[in-house]
Length: 141
Image (tube, rainbow, N blue to C red; front, side, top):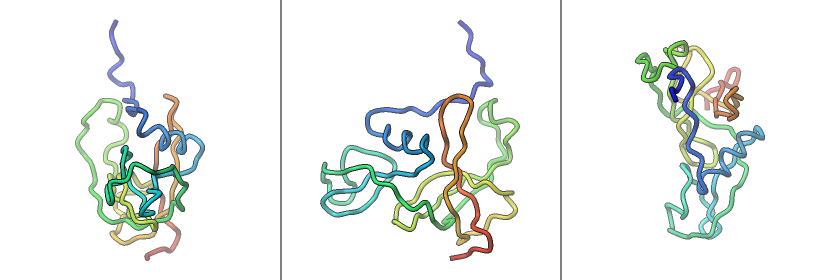
């Protein structure tokens, strides 16, 4: 059976990261938080990266952050993204501490390291929701 190569690849949802993908579907951003040291982390994992505790829970975070770094992707690595290029790939540092890989919904020429961002969501027809930050109007932190 042939597969449509223009179909957008779906995220690999598993037991460790299902809480993250479920939160995005609800238009919330939840990350794992350690019950022992209190730190948040991402990407998802079975233990705290800071103190190695296996006691944690999914907790909603503010969704506010700062553009830490970015690049503009011009190369089309998958046919489903041909129309999207060029697009920004960003590292966003959340107020709660962790840094996330995401996109930013604005023209690449408008991106500036240090700009204030807030969480946004992209509901895709394939049935999943992606994280997509957006600039806070007039904001630099």
